[in-house]
Image 1 (cartoon, rainbow, N blue to C red):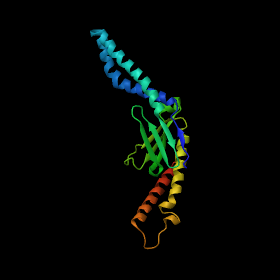
Image 2: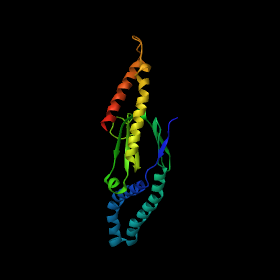
Image 3: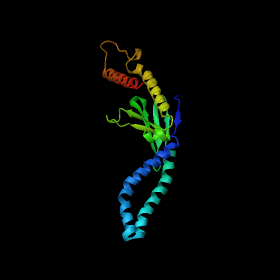
Image 4: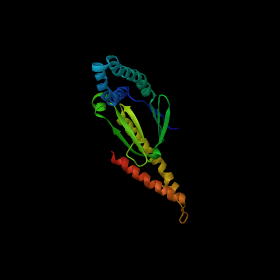
Length: 206
């Protein structure tokens, strides 16, 4: 039976969410509305100007205070010998499975705030199903031990590739008699070549 390893984002990830929310709020609201509200408060209608400044800010603070802790608490990750599982969502729950057979690259990222203040990082898992783009198929965010998680993903991936290789054309399991090659054999050969390329990508990260 596959060993199950479960983990969650570090509590500092909640601070990161607050910072992101404040940046979005300031850029999306205050820069455009604050000058109008100040003008109303000073020259036209002090009550409406004050309300235009205060009410949205109160709604933002209260909404964020309720949503952000619930969002961080909803995130749960799990790893087995064959796949990565991600659970998240507040109003609607998302359950995503990333099989190791589809993984093409594993990287880590850290913003300057994460590095200098929050001491957290992210693990990006890119798969063959990402449409050929550079975007990660799944992100494991807000991890204090992100490097250990990355190394564990890579170890599991290598172990899975090694276990899967015999059934994909290597050794006796992949042997065929002369003149008996089939379409399945051709598919297995192509899959083996893809696995070799993936292995080279993983080795280049060491």
